[in-house]
Image (tube, rainbow, N blue to C red; front, side):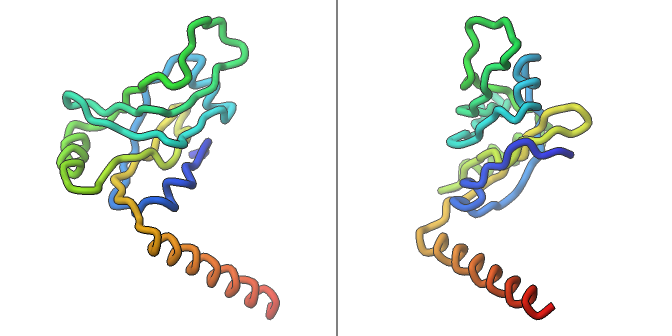
Length: 148
């Protein structure tokens, strides 16, 4: 599994409740562009419509050698999930403050896949707590390195 892009902002802004791995329906030039790492998940989100999952607002840059003239980098892409997973996500979306965002794009066995998660937004105080924990962990790591 080769991780192409991580949505670092999502890991910081949201509390992750449950993760799912989903395949993506892509065109040929899009998968080549993803393999080059020309993908951005900032502001991307997942919606459930008529029993199908769709990834919206994900940017995949145009492949440099593609002959497509009318390429849309923000096109809506279908996600491939089991029916049970889609139902589970749809049921959780009805709860207050829960949404679905993509966390990672990765290549697994020559297929591009997306790690999506049910998330709940963090409050400002929670974000400060996360920053504080990260700083303490860094200080401990530095102290251990100096003693060894």
